[in-house]
Length: 390
Image (cartoon, rainbow, N blue to C red):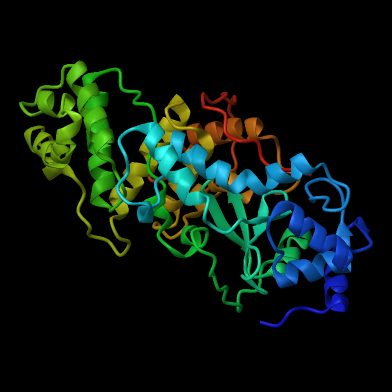
């Protein structure tokens, strides 16, 4: 793809409200030298044509250097947050260490060598040179990373006119690591990180069953999640001969977690109760069961609302052919936030409200129809890195 001309970039910018004179070559070179990256060719021409100003636009001319560094660091810090708190692990980093501090150390070292994404507007990013011109714009919120425009021009149309993107264009993702979330298998990157909320033996058995369903449909379930499920079930009095051994499995024997877990399933007669793959959509019934479980975790506070929506998006909504009944919940996810969205706390409360509404109705839910809103509930969650803004 060719680099757009200054005149073309100025035509693009007619959609924007406040645009100052563009950065000179000298100013652009100074920014690149100061922060240690190079703008992609189309991004550089865009900023030379005019410098958009206002909320969420990075001010490369007069902005606070520390604020700009925070915007540049946001994608990596958000990924590290998900490594620490939400179970994310990139397969190419090798085996996932059991120790949390070692996981962060390995991830931080690996992320030091990935291309530094460059802020475009809020949490929309472009990769640096030599990627582009014409690389898709990425919306980055921790490891919720999606394409938000096939290229810079397409993104401007989508973001600022509410027009649909160019459906005939085919995006090309080439930037190492970050493209994985868009063209790889996003479901495998988003596990179900949560605090076990079971308080009865029946709930503990359901917890075991849901982990079995996740494994059935091909989702990533870690050994320590299986052991924790066993520990919870054993503490609540679930009767299975192999359960105490699973619950107390020493670290050096964690490779036995899967066979022991499967043995526990057989002893509790859960294996035979798992739904068959017998519809046109792969594991449709199992997916709907999982979506209902994830909704309960969001409501109970065992799963952070934004993470829960991401899990449901990749593990339920997309494989289930994007049912309209789930769209109101999916649209509350951080990867779909618009510039005038509510605060993250308000969105989390709205997500809990919508999860409650879905759980109160028939299952699977019929096509969505508006109803009276329920009282929102504040989520219990660790604090994630603040979203970048200018």
